[in-house]
Length: 289
Ligand code: SF4
Image 1: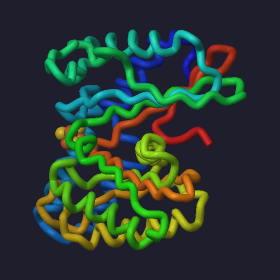
Image 2: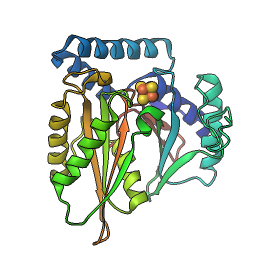
Image 3: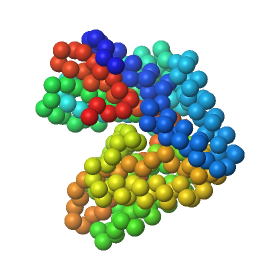
């Protein structure tokens, strides 16, 4: 979709509306495929309810879940100096217009700012020498975000121990992250960079191939293992515990082995806008490249 010039504030409102009211195609297809292969009646009815809920949300342009999440942004390319103010203004407007549930609170007083911004928006930056700016929003519900885990393994721990940690994290989460989930895994970096990798892994569409053959094999192994666990949709039993596993990796210290897991619930909301230097904007819920 190409839209003529808009302000960054309008772009952010549009991104939030897209992501909150419509599932990305790859996620819808994965849910439909799961509903077709599920063996159990309860699991099939849960998946049917999720698909029915999603299509109704899209039809009436209302959020697909009552927890509209805390919006996490990724900005890459040319970084405008006032982008953070524009994002905050867009989030405030979207909170009123869509509307979104106000979720941002002071962590100690628990006072709600009422605007989903609070002390500031959450933004990850990647400056690049390209003729555009790209913004992605990933609204994260607490049910899935609260199940995030980081393990500082030992350098000699190999693939099997990494996979055990991921499987244990998903199974110990039970039904709390509203499965079927998408499992984002970060391997390497430092503790903070590893958590960011796990979250960025959730942006990889389910129908894209991991460019690293070793990670692709790990994603497939984990997908089979997790879907053989019997946890199932909403943790009520079944063949579909996860819709996909996505892994990102970075170099780490020779004496470190960080591994992070960040889960996304079935309401795997995301949308991206790319604004070119002529001001035209393209939108996708997948990936541009
Ligand atoms: S985990 Fe996801 S689907 Fe479940 S309540 Fe939170 S946002 Fe909604």
